[in-house]
Length: 338
Image 1: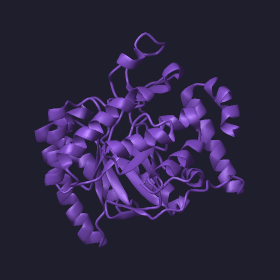
Image 2: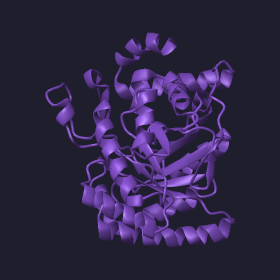
Image 3: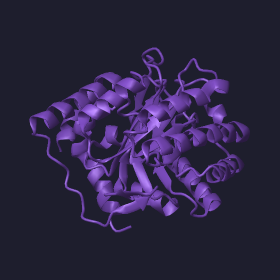
Image 4: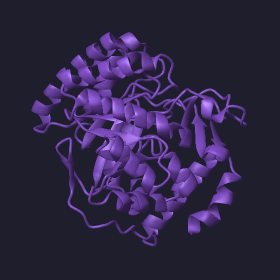
């Protein structure tokens, strides 16, 4: 109810400004002890990646890039929170404006470009927050690191976040860092995961714990490429796959204001395509590793459709912009007992 009243005011602002204002208000409420903690349904924990999740609904990476808002986000009832994408060095991202709403389709377009304060700042924020839930940390390469040196950035990010993360996501699928999606190709992904896997083995020995790895893929791959990715993930003992990132397709928003802006499209127009990718992955993986479904969830029914397609867990982002915090509990209740 409160979000329904606030949404027109927030939608009158630039999307990035509204985003910062919303998270800031949530932080203030959490610090003051007045943020009501969402009541989630009682259900057995969900096992995935060797972790026990209190419910199936997580926050997708991108909303809290620097892990600066964990205290406030923790009050919303998520079963897990993924922060980032973070890069080894701080970078400003792409020039503004770089985010647009398309309300007629419950959609967003963004070309943020991994704007973040760098991995050291993120780690300091995580340590300071004292967040007690399951935390995923999404890592990427800096915009000026060429792909033939990308593994260096991923290893640096992995080493920095390893002591703090319950799982780490390898982001090779954002459309907003030039050339990044090329890392999804057969040879490139195989080489990258070989190097990252070797680094994880060293970190496991050093820290005495094995941190699960997930890989986040694009929705714009064809079926053959999805099947090839699935084979590569299994071969490298990756622990989960996140499907999907944003899309560069514009069919569902053609002719609408801002539809021609460069960047990734998320929200309702991504829903059907992300479900198709999940189904294709599920067939190719045949239960070898769990799928985290993300893309266009705006209701509990949408969350159930992700599980029906083959996902084990789901994540939200754009739906929160259009539906507000109540969407978390709605989805958790819809998936309780599944």
